[in-house]
Length: 287
Image (cartoon, rainbow, N blue to C red; front, side):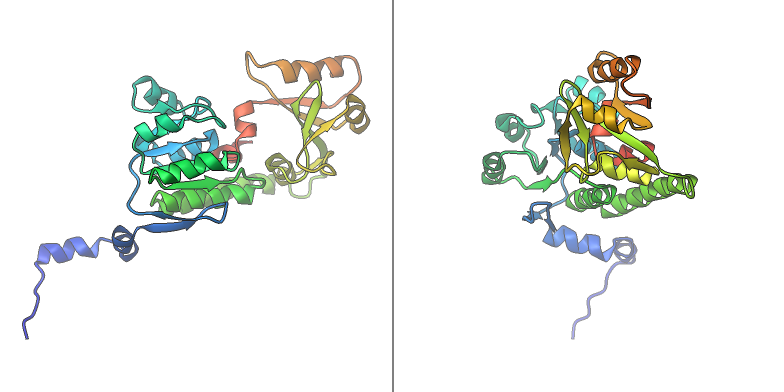
């Protein structure tokens, strides 16, 4: 019987290739996305299109920024995103809910990562073009963020990096949770809009952040993002009001400060960058 003898150098190389990676290279990777769709990623993606700022932030946090070729006009973090857009290395493919199908196809991506607010017909057209697309549902909890990071990591053949990122976030959040152990919970409201007022209720990512931070969402009796009257906010009069604020985008902050100056509410106003508070992604640990 003829024996096959491998060259010592080849043996050395093979010994450093994880069996899982070798298998994936030959079989591709199949993921179940947040819509329950089974999607085959036939090879490691090198041209990725992101259709949400939180997805873009996750890709860059996983060290995959050099593989991103398309983002929305709202994707502005980390700063490298805008730098690469300016250099022509990344193309802006449109908005969050109205991305350009033509621009995406022209980029010849091998993976598109979308979200649950996309039109089903748009998703079908991406599939018809032979492009793998996975759908990530907007997270409603911190645990949901971890799951989305793992999903994106697996689809991009970066499971190890995703696991490391999740553990890092868990460690940071655990640290802050320990700081508020034994401390009485405080009443909090997150103001999403004014005229009319909109707040974060139960079943939102913000509600979960408030709970983990030792707060009590005074509008947890509302489901999702809820519209309330000025009188309801005055009645609740929470100790802390989280308000989106950024230079040039002071509408919500000014509206709440006006109510405070009139003596209608008395809580401390905490301004936070609207991008950070509205994007359930890897920056959750700094909230």
